[in-house]
Amino acid sequence: MNNQNTNTPKVALVTGASSGMGKAIAKQLISDGLIVYVAARRVEKMRDLEELGAIALKMDITLEEDIQNVVEQIEQEHNGVDILVNNAGYAVLGAMEDTTIEDARRQFEVNLFGLASLTKSVLPSMRTKKFGKIINISSVNGKTYSPLGSWYYAAKHALEGWSDCLRLELTPFNIDVVIIEPGVIKTNFGDVTLPPMMERSGNSAYSAMAKKIEKMIKSYNDPGNASDPSVIAKVVSQAIKVKKPKTRYPAGKLAKPLIFMRKWLGDRIFDKIIMSGG
Image 1 (cartoon, one colour):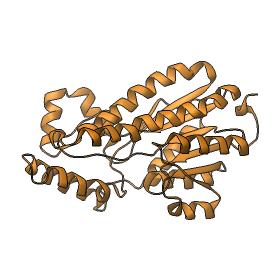
Image 2 (tube, one colour; image 1 turned 180 degrees about the horizontal axis):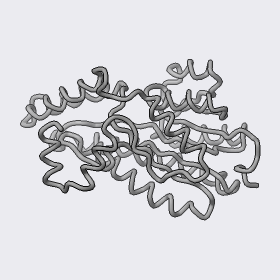
Image 3 (tube, one colour; image 1 turned 90 degrees about the horizontal axis):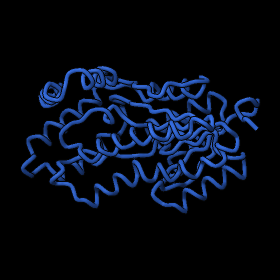
Image 4 (cartoon, helix red, strand yellow; image 1 turned 45 degrees about the vertical axis):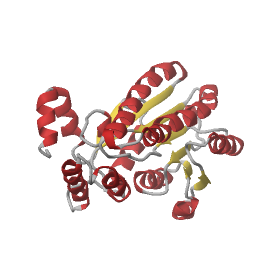
């Protein structure tokens, strides 16, 4: 059976839906008429989504048992996931020298390996139905770089390459892999990432750089300096609706300009732009 040709509502799973872009994406997909499952560690943060019609499930993306429980429940209730939105993730910021390898490993466990494990688990039913869309929320940082972001940027660069390979592998099964590359989005990013960053590097040899990065990230909360998460939600919706989505969608404040500069200006000029604060 090709699920794409039926009138049955598609089943979406959105991870990291307790806040920010994940919550906005979930709301958009509910509005679009999809059956929407939302997953996060904090189920209580998704009550508003439940009131809108979503099915909220507890899942720590680093726990295989949680992943299997979520996938099995969706398979039992709705014959598996049709649309997987891999949004769960976080950022480890701080100078590479100041960051423990333990923290670096966890960055990859959440932002790549957990995501990969969940994707592996939904693929069998997608292949059986010969339909599926995997939407990976990467970042403009998956194509660029900045000081004090080595492990976060590395994880996003890895996600981009992983997604490209997966796209080719899944083409024969009519399963699309789409990368979304958000720019500067108004979320709680700074509130979550800045205190640990300053703890790591605020008083180290990299303190001047850390203070500069802190000021820049805090400025994202100023009006006009960041895009609303709904911008990304609409792009995800578009990628799901079209028969043949693009492989990549850069979206949000500064996304396209930064990717353009990184592609065409060369390393040294881009270095100077980033170190000057843009």
